[in-house]
Picture 1 (cartoon, helix red, strand yellow):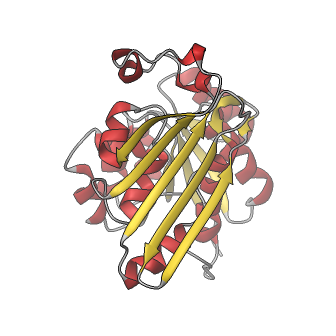
Picture 2 (cartoon, helix red, strand yellow):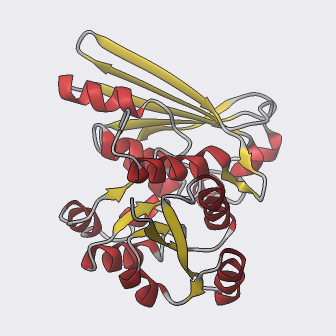
Amino acid sequence: MKKKSVAIVGCGAIGAFVAERLHENFRESFSLDWFSSNTMAKAEALAARFGGQAAPYEEAIPRCDVVLEATTVQAMPGVLRTAARHGKALVVLSIGGFLQDPDLLAEAEAAVAPIYLPSGALAGFDGIMGMREIGLEEVVLTITKHPKSLAGNAYLEQQGVDLTALTEPVTLFDGPADQAIRNFPANVNVAINLSLAGLGFSRTRVHLVADPNTTTTVLTVSAKAGPCAMTATTTGVPLPQNPRSSLLAAQAALGAFRRLASPLHTGT
């Protein structure tokens, strides 16, 4: 099988991590040919390391087969539109970009080439997709984080919440995903993919808890559909190269590339 040419757009910690794993484990299926970043020095460094070329994404995307988007929520819409316009398969990591532009989701659904939205740090998507066919009645995402990871949140400051004073778990928010995403844009992006897979933003409920005694982020998805019920819990581990990023989210991107490399697809 001919190797697929890959463009890595976004050469920060996650982009570099995925490039390294693709080079180590998927060398027979993918060729790392193009690297792009808003800091071109990072793109040039990765290009030199893996034998590719550095270029703006507008130039790199038309020359590849598959695009990994690992930029920012602000830059993602431009990357998606460029990939869609040129008919390139795309793996999206900055899923919050869908909230930046109300037309973007419809454009993604109309794209000719596949667009992959990896599950990120969440588990349970197979169950959600299956239960959706039955008729989902309820989807709840409970996120438990250490208060330090929520420091500087404007919504909490407006509410007068003193995160440094917490001595036990406290519920900071309990409501629809669209409000949770607006109030906590840096902390609940996992709710975007879950909402798209299930009941949508207004009917997916998010329960955010600050726990000063936890050392990890814990994500629990629960769902009901007719006689079926599901609960899936994931304990997060930070990416060693960047503690603010999730190791599982980066690995989920590699799962998308595994699907692209094989005709046998398991799960979602």
